[in-house]
Length: 538
Image (cartoon, rainbow, N blue to C red):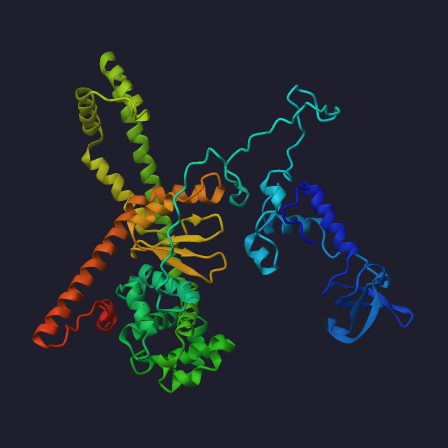
C-alpha cells in the first residue's frame, strides 16, 4: 500500500498500514488454512484476482518450513492468527523508509526500487494537498464557522527550508544560474568509478601502513585499463594488500596455511595469491576467472571486474587490526586537535574581551563603529580608524596564533578518518571532493552514474544554481562555500597542469615534425608505467 505524498498523521498512517496488512493477503505471508478438515500451516505464493473472487496459491509447509505441495485457496478461507508485523516494528519501518512526514515522502532509493513515483503530484506542488492545520479567515473567525461568499482564507507563508522536491518557483526568487554539464570522460566503466575512487582513496590514506608510496588517480585508472598482466603499479597494490592480510593472521592467513603457500609476494607469485583470495571469498562472478588469472592473463579481465576484485581486497583490509588501530589513533588525534582549536578560540575571545575592557572610551566607540561597519558593507570606513583597529588586532592575535589556527585546521583535515560526501542536491546526487585530486565528483542517487567538475568557473556556476529554499541544496551550498578556497585552488591547479601538459605535447609534436624524430617518451598519460614503490619494505 503506497502512501507517497499522503498527508496523514503518523498515528493514522500507522493504523492504515497495520489494518491493510491484516486484511489484504500478500505474497510471502505465512498463515494457516483448512486442509483435509484440519488447520495446516501454509505460505502465500501468489495472489490471483481481486475482491470477493480473490484466490491465493498457497504452499503447504512441512518440516523446516519447506513447501511440500501447493493448492488454490479462497482468500476468505485463510486463517491469520497474528498480525504479520507489530505496530512497534511498523513504526520503525515507517521512520526508516521515509524522509519527510507532511506530506509523507518515501526515501528515493526505496521509491526507485519499487517503482514509486518520485515527483510530487500537481495538487502538492500547488500547495492544495498539504495539511495546514486549523484554517483561519481574514476576519479572525474559526474554520468551524460557515464561509461567506466574500470571505477568503488567509494563505499561510511557507517556512523554508523545506524538502527540495516540494519547492516551487516564486516571482520573488533570485535568478539561478544554469547548472554546468558534468564531464564523464572516464576510462573505466561509468558504474565502476565508485570502486576506482574507493580503492585509490584507501591506498592514499593508508599508504604508510601499506608501505605503498602515493600515485595519482589517473595513474591507477590508466593501469587498471591496461591489458598488461604484470604492471608494477597493479602488482604493488595487490602485494601491499596481501602483506597486510597475512600480517593480520586472519581468515586469509589461515586459508594460506591450510594450502601451505605462505611465501613472499613477488612479481611471479602475486597472481597465485590473488587466486587464493578469490577461492577464499567464494563469489560466483570471480570463480570463473580464477583459471584465467592462474594462466597469467590477469590483464585480459574486464576493467570493471578488476576494480571489483580490488574493492573486495580493500573491504577485507579495512577489517584488519592494523587498520582499526590506525583509525582509532586518528580519531584520538582529531579529538585532541578539535579540543586545541576550541581552547585557542576561547582564549582569543577572552583576550579580545579584555582588550575591549581596557580600552579608552573614545577608542572603544571607534571599535564599535568599525564592528558595525563590518556587518553593514554599505557604510564606508575611515582609513585611520581601520588602520588602528588592524594594528590592535594584529598585536593581540599575532601571526603566531594565526599560524597555529591554520595549522590546527590543516592537521584536522589531514587526519580525517574517512572521506565523506559534502552533501546532496535536489535529486539526491552526492558531491565528493578528495584533497589529493583536483576534481569535484558527483555521484547519482543509485551510484550507477558519475561525473565531475574540474574548473573554478564550473564551481561558481554550480554554487549559483542551488535553490536554498530546499533543505539538501541549502546544506550542500553551505558546505561548498565553507570549503570554497580549498576546492577552487585545487581545481585551478589541475587546470594549469592540464594547460602546461597540452603546451608541452604541442611543443614536442612540432619538434618531432621538424627534426623527424620520435616524440618524448615522458608522456604524462604513461607515467603509471614508471611507478616505483619508494616505501616498499626491503
